[in-house]
Image (cartoon, rainbow, N blue to C red; front, side, top):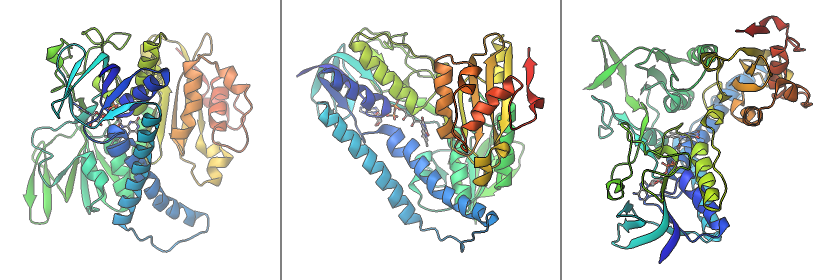
Length: 466
Ligand code: FAD
């Protein structure tokens, strides 16, 4: 049968695209070789955030002691946590399957490979034909010299999420988002965690201001995560009581397990791209134009396969926008506006550009900040660490970017994302009554601080930045 659209990859990019194609009434096939939901639902966002939430209870129990409520030492049943996490994943992936089915999408549980224009060969030997093909095959973790996922001592993020054991000592190689999120989870579970980062700073590929990163580093230190920046891990040696990570310069770090989290690369090889002339860049990302079309007509690509932040909501936004474009809509994507949440302790979330980036772009900006310690709600939660920061154009007061580090930052950033996406001004946020006592008041006060008129702090930090 010929389809209107065939999609290779059932992650957040592919399945969201398929559902919207189904809603539009296009005959759609979704080809997935492993599990619906892709990395995000099965081995990424959802399992990490489930474990983040579970282990947050441990941190919360410690905090409760400050409020006068003490619990006995928590008992950790690793098997049950893993089962609970797997249950969350299954509930979501089953739900995706149902929604696909109800929207008339045919899910093909096979491996797919391009075999010419509009043709996809399946692992069973069957061939699918479609007017348009969407590539949404995602990404895989990178290995570095000296470390291989084939070694028992070396974990990928997927191994870490399987939760088979709590190592006494864990080395996390890579101080990016995934490494730091898993470092937080394992530290809460009781591992002694050391993060080794080659670059001079952690989170260096995320557009964050130095103050935000410095605040996180202080907090990581406070919970007992050791961070070594500017340090190269060159390999490891198995020793009697574990493994020694070999560091440049000859020093060793004794641990029990190594989590390698040094980034991901697009899974663009072995998709049959050469059969249709789809080009990739030197890092393997598929080249696309503004309409998400590859260098081959009628073949499109989305998500982790194409340049831009490797985020689930970026993938699904592209997938939905692409499907809508098949129905005649224009595509209007803005990578700068894509918010990001980092589930460390405390959380970090950002939308739009940092103060640093805005200045690099030649903007004169106003910067406002407001500390969690001045928010009644945060104090009542015993969560006083962190701050809200807003960056706005000096001339028009339009909000260019927001960074939040502190409790529930991941949930708080969406108001900022609306402001950035729609070019709202400081005054737009200020004039919107925010309920009291709540955490979002922090964003409103940061906007007021940018204009030198926050109510609950002395406005010393309000200043004009050239
Ligand atoms: P994927 O989710 O990778 O899906 C691609 C799918 O294609 C896979 O299911 C694969 O099996 C299938 N496939 C590949 N090749 C073929 C083929 N030839 N035939 C058939 N099927 C094929 N992002 C966030 O936004 N928030 C988070 O909190 C977050 N946390 C993360 C935590 C971890 C540990 C990891 C690893 C990632 C995390 N991410 C997070 C990133 C997020 O998971 C990815 O950005 C997202 O999954 C990309 O979606 P995608 O649809 O492009 O690809």
